[in-house]
Length: 154
Image 1 (cartoon, one colour):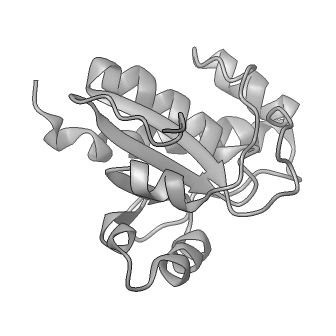
Image 2 (cartoon, one colour):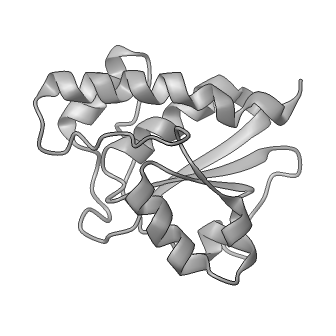
Image 3 (spheres, one colour):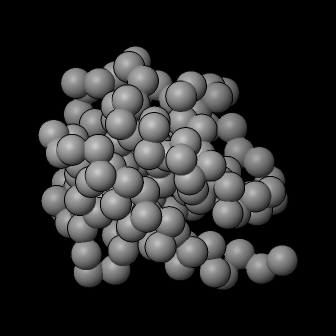
């Protein structure tokens, strides 16, 4: 059994997906992990291979750190079937990501696990934006995270 499919028996498993696993999803994984504590196990991935093996954008690392989230050790990975099977919930950072995940999982059990990070809204990808937009991204993710943890109990 690979580490991608190993499950903790008492934790809700969340997979957060963005385009490159370089900005939004690593931040969201850190936020959900910190807020969810022992109740969750959170991973992140991207739809594209461009950043695989690379650390997050330096502005993402800095903006996350300013809010108390350490994503320096993160390395980008591409989403795969094992990750989708592992997860109890698969959360897309925007509607385009959600649409692509729906296409990938048509007719599969993973299709029932898909959700948008913020209902009806996209979390803007700050990829080519100035540093303040990365800070806004972290704030948006913090505000949207709680709804994914509400039904986990105590």
